[in-house]
Length: 157
Length: 266
Image (cartoon, rainbow over all chains, first blue to last red; front, side, top):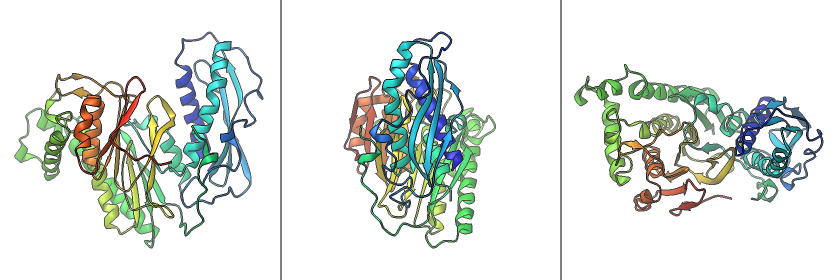
């Protein structure tokens, strides 16, 4: 289960980098926000215990002790990002971003707007009882960072 | 966009064990399996999955256009005639003819540069062949995701059908929609591997869609139709709309969307 969380972290970081990639390249990163500025699960989507099971046969309510998996700090081209995933049983109950360093205030603004959306979507994908993700054919390398890869790990018996 | 908080709580019911899963690299991508065991012993399910993987690797060896020694490559170079090709090739040839007709010509393996190229159909076709082995094993349900193209039958324990997310073309971790299926869902687009789609009318690379998804009974045909809609965009939709049991969902390059009556799940 720990590995599943790590795959979702990778997917989140990849998506985040893609969104921030919409604007021009940035100077070397400087610290703009403290570690607590974007964490804390303020988004309704991040409410612990919300949503269905990660699989159809899973329980309605999360079971077992909550475990947190802290992601490593990722360099994503426009700054640095770390993600924490909280897992109960096989269900992801929260995704937070404890660390966000961006190169410029504009990147920071953009990140603050975008992160809740990304969080809700990661949660949605993780808890909406999805068994597969259809999409343009991915390479074996791209698979490793895909939601499908995370699902394969989550559903492992 | 509603978060998981708004998802209906799952009704308590006879939920069985989670499906047996497996991920198999083949055809330059990864095939993901989810198999409901039902009354079958897990060893039998694992054996069926291994057999299904053998099918995929055999299809890969026959139809790889990357492998210069494959039968399809030899055929493309004119070094082998149709009569010298293995039986699977004849099946694919027939599927390609049917798909060209059904797509209104937007899917046309004979109009590809370098000669006959069934790549836009073969992966879906191979996935279906692999799935047939799982069906024969007597399990109540199974799903194979062939690198983004999904074939399934039955349902996971405690649900009516399999829920399949449609990847958002610009966000790898976001979904553009969710569909429920007990058959086929295929998606085509250029966001993963660049401009590889060819317009059969010009022979040039062309894409009039950010993402094209087709649902229907057969994954071989759905795969080919998704390729056709990704190339033809809006112009290719009437062909899909005219096919019983098939529906298309198109996200255009400008981000706007349309569909031919595809059913989205919530």
